[in-house]
Image (cartoon, rainbow, N blue to C red; front, top):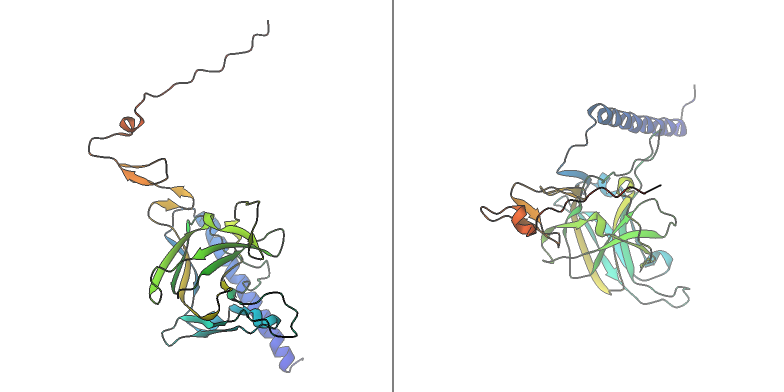
Length: 273
């Protein structure tokens, strides 16, 4: 019977595939039986509390093509992830690159099962939620979905109101913009939220030290949202700007309209005589 390190490694790989496949079949079977399309508050996507979880992410910078930036990724004593380093826009002599000064992290593709490579279905959630502690740099959040060209990326600014403090930032999925090599594309199709492959963070052309600490990433709804659908409570309405308002005591939607309901008669039939 075959044995040895290579045989044992082969068994380990097959066992991992089988385990992931069984978990996938179990999850899909439960979803089919329940046919669960009900409202959910959140869907956890990433938690940064272990070395194993951090190993599901990859780090990149202009150092990969000869630049001088430094980027590091590690677990803190508080069981959070820290992405830090120094950006340099200096182009070293003898290196054939036109610009420098970028760094980023992104999640690796989820491991294959025997059936396919799983992705995140965020269709029924309004926001990408990130609990993070940032600096004063201008950061980007990057989403990867199946697209025509591999350089396509969905991006949104990551703004920190209180640099150096923990914040929970909500970004509507529908507000992400399609880019390629950092340039906004003229055609802006709807993002495929049902097939989200990876999440990432990056910054460019801001020389100096940088730091981004991460606790978790989720897809979430607020009590009044279900994906892109707005759910209103009793006595609430939405104004023309999309803001949720509450009716005054005794007020009705009829009062807001200021005009009676207009009935439209059937279209006149064509006279064929």
